Length: 618
Ligand code: UTP
Image 1 (spheres, rainbow, N blue to C red):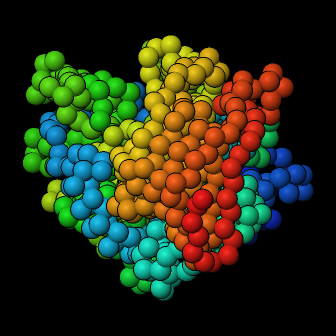
Image 2: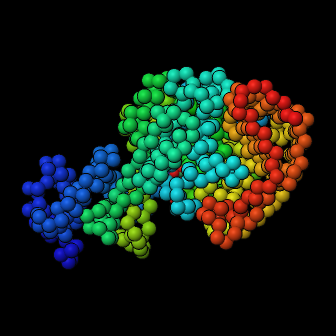
Image 3: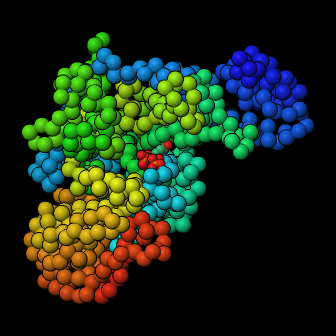
């Protein structure tokens, strides 16, 4: 054993480097140093020069260590202890599902626009004023490869509204319905519907800037709260020694801890207590790039209410073995039970080892009986608050080290502990009512996560691409389908190719949430006399007072009505050259390059009603 590998010698060396420095530290700094040494982190101080040299750097190091210490329940000592256990389990290949048997949990499969759905929406809308929304937006989005934050990307380029704008406008529209006052953009009774956004160091400043530059997209600044998650230290080996930055020996290497942090932050920030005091009953969690999520929230909230779910995972139908987490009820040999997300690569072996030698297989309807978790979650606030008061919001963690070789002793690069928000039910008692709600992909699930290059690879292997290109076409496709379910006749989509991926492209329909927040509402505003004749047509509708009764569209039509303007479209025929979707040029900006096209806006019939009143078109 070299001196470097001998822990006793290392401890002595760092103790002597530290000795002279101690006098210049505060009591609190010394306590932190003691805590770090006590949990085996002497190496961090080994190279420290004598007092008087690089003192500012040492203090900078201690300030960062304190942030990490404060940001983790139980501090760095608890983090290191948890890491040692998880790293040891990982090395030994411990199976986390040993002793558990899966079955299909209680849940509701909802056919959008069915009578059942309409009833669920009504039940959900009775509750919506008692909801608070939480957007987790601390992720880097490395797979997408966009240089900015994901929530500033436009969900589609027809209106160019970014994700955050869409989310806030949808929440404000829901709020106005909850307050019983049409149209939107007015504050509801009491505090309105609050929105918390979890950011991280990677996204915080840009998110705040986006909100401030845009006047909070019409929300009251007090309605939106940013809660920032801290990163956690990286680990160099199975002893959970913390990693120093390769370029800066006075800096810990840190990485995101995962979206599971949201639970502890809602608790420690006092937000949950405030919401509870304001009479809120539900917390709706959603992600940064799923433009369709708000279409299914009212129905899913109705399910939560009817089924008394304390935790409801929004899901999509899932093909057997499809690469999306599955919701399963697990029963342990010792009688414990939990309904949780099981990763697809764990579900198949678990089923084979327990109830089905064929593993994860499709049922007669061509889908796995275990639905696919899209990680938009609805939680009943009173039970959630009580639970977080017990646990502090700590979520079961995992570690995923990439080992250099089979000895599993060294890592290719430092690793860290992570946690996921969907793992919250693991902390619940067996009698907690946990379930799921399934809607079809087209209406509630359109994530934009992948770069164009990864999209091509996914497309070639027959998988959903989840790129900015598919995301944009899915917005239009969903809105067009909603119109047709409401009775309109809509031209069928045509395949188009952008960024080497083929996507179905129908009429570019953008329905602002002020126009309709639910299918119940939409149905009452769209008549059977609406026809969009060509797949290249563009239709933008904004405003609670717009009604589409008789319309023939072949081209581009934009109708915007301010609050208090009632506009009835009855007998309008629009035929113009419309807009063209063209391949993006080689020097296209980043946002265009991500989707592979640019829009050439040609002739447009545009009707803007910016004064309250009653109008007819034509
Ligand atoms: P993603 O799975 O999309 O991960 O996160 P990501 O980190 O954003 O993107 P990649 O993996 O680097 O490509 C799902 C949701 O969780 C949020 C993301 O912002 C997204 O809304 N998230 C993720 C956090 O809020 N914090 C995290 O530490 C990680």
